[in-house]
Amino acid sequence: MKTPSLILASSSSARLRLLKTVGINPIVMPSNFDESTVKLTEPRKLVETLAQTKAETIANSIIKENPSERSSNLILGCDSVLVIEGQIYGKPADRQEAIARWQKMRGQVGELYTGHALIDLFQNQTIVLCRMTKVHFAPVNNQEIEAYVATEEPLKCAGCFAIEGKGGLFIEKIEGCHTNVIGLSLPLFRVMLNNLGYQISNFW
Image (cartoon, rainbow, N blue to C red):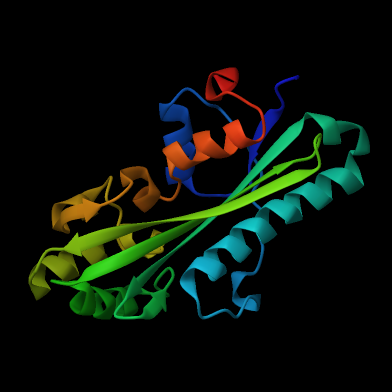
């Protein structure tokens, strides 16, 4: 089977870095899908739906604009949310919201859900899976929270923190897949590729 090109339907620099870290250089095509149009209250279903919709947006665009290219593309869509005490959180709207979020998160255990959708245009197959990782937040003080939010790093993240950045200072431990917290579970991605008949080494 011919190895297709991998398209990352995301503008996330963190997801792109993860893929490059393991030797994969995808084509980046952000879907620009309006996530606010999806109204679901179950986190697993929400991230799976958003991931699939993002991937489908790019797939439909390719089919419409470049029909001859459909056989050579594999499209990956992802979406993450953080759940604290049963409430779903995405990216904070501003610094004030980020500070309030951290004041609630500190000392708590959150659940980070990331949905993954992989569309194989050649085989006309779609795989959608979700992985959850538990995140234990340190009991940080208000000064630490305000200083962290001032860096604007948490404003770019669904969980209001970047574990691979300064946010890693405020995470006591995680239970589950580390890269899932960053926005893309690399082990799960490998399994999804295998399920479609590909080897991860095909993309190195």
